[in-house]
Amino acid sequence: MDAPTFARYSGGMPRLRLSLAIVLLVSCGGAPVRRADPVAVVAEPTPEDPSWVAAVREVVARAEESPHTYAHVEGLTDAAGPRLAGSPGDALAVAWAVRAMGDLGFQNVHAEPVTVSVWERGEERVDVISPVPHRLVAAALGGSVGTPAGGLEASVVRVGSLAELAELPRERAEGQIVFVDQRMTRSRDGSGYGEAIMVRIRAASQAAQLGAVAVLIRSIGTDSTRFAHTGVTRYADDAPRIPAAALSNPDADTLARWLEGGTPVRIRIQLGCRDAGEAQSANVIGEVVGRERSEEIVLLGAHLDSWDLGRGAIDDGAGVGIMMEVARQIATAPVPPSRTVRVVLFANEENGGAGSRAYAAAHATELDRHVLAMEADFGDGRAYGWHAPVPIAASPSWARIARLLEPQDVAYDEGEAEGGADLEAMHEQGGVPLADVRQDGSRYFDIHHTANDVMSAIDRESLDQAMRAVLTVAYAVSLDLELER
Image 1 (spheres, one colour):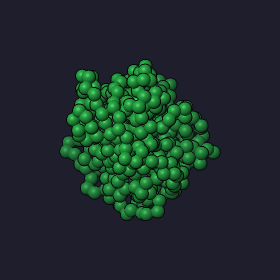
Image 2 (tube, one colour; image 1 turned 180 degrees about the horizontal axis):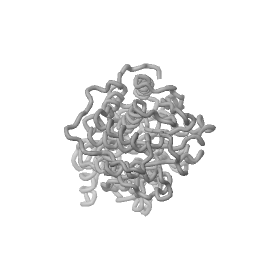
Image 3 (cartoon, helix red, strand yellow; image 1 turned 60 degrees about the horizontal axis):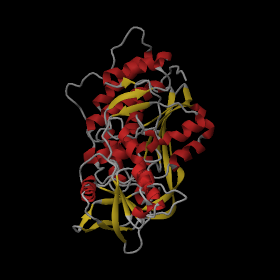
Image 4 (spheres, helix red, strand yellow; image 1 turned 45 degrees about the horizontal axis):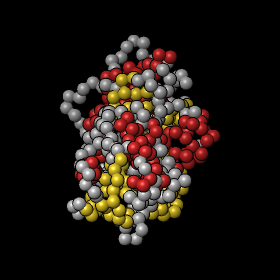
């Protein structure tokens, strides 16, 4: 997950958000995960329930017994590894997705070309020259320009926020490296991200307008480990482009302590990052074709790309695994779907959003046939809440779905469903209805956009619980029930 989703983290869930085939039979998925004495995850039936409610209860119970969610994530990360848009890993991911969807028995599987901008990280190094020479753990921000050959060296000036940067006199910033030391707060709903991410987006241009030669920021993350968090930055058209990098939180702590204590600090930055033109990626699409209402579409989205430091297991391998498994469960359900369930694995969410725009353009004439779209892009956290497209008080069908989610400890929230970054274009252009399943993000930003985003970070049990919550909504909507819009 990344910008331009930053504005959607203001107090709720995000609004979020080809040639080489890698053979992986994810339909087998390894040994199924079975739990002794599983807790009840389905609502008790009532006499007034329509038949589709029983069908949903049965499928959710089956999904608890034999989930393959983790296997899908493992398949993607092992086959492709890091998969920044336009990179070799990106092409491997597209090939994996096409093969995996075919192995799962999805229909109409294909890749739709997407032109993406390519950014390469190159070598990077940030060193304290004085007072005590040592190397800092740092990562260039996505889209940053590189330093001159041999790097650049300057003294450091600290500010605690963008607001402080805006008040910084030009004579203090000119020729300096500006360090923006704003700490992100931990929250279940991700709201702390929205309060901090603007630093990553805007600091470089604001500092450049004051004559700074480079900018360093405290990582936009909640961990205390020596992992730096990357993520996209944006340059303003009316400012010079200067190098931008994030420091790990412990290194930012050291730098802040010196500067706040009045100790002068001098740093050398060497960044080899650069723009590398354009390349072809793809959105990968597969369907479970419905019966009576096959022309109506329930879209399940996640993004296939990732940042380049880790292996993209949490962001967004987990989302890919959730949506692939939801569709697999629906494809094998005793009661087949009435509406078509379409899985879309989007290209280039992290540093451009080209996949979202390409899908909306390619499917413009059928957006009105999308009865619902959902996105998974918040890692492996447990589902704890959800938003419906309409208030459940005005909809018997959505009220019954709410009741099906209650035994899973997923509570209805009257707030507006916002979807995710990859659903934005289709929602704005075609009015596609959205639903959110809200996942616990308390630990998500410990790992987000770091080299620590690997398979060992995944919690299987919470990942499967989130999958079942999405399955409850998606499968119910795919059945032959009337939906108020």
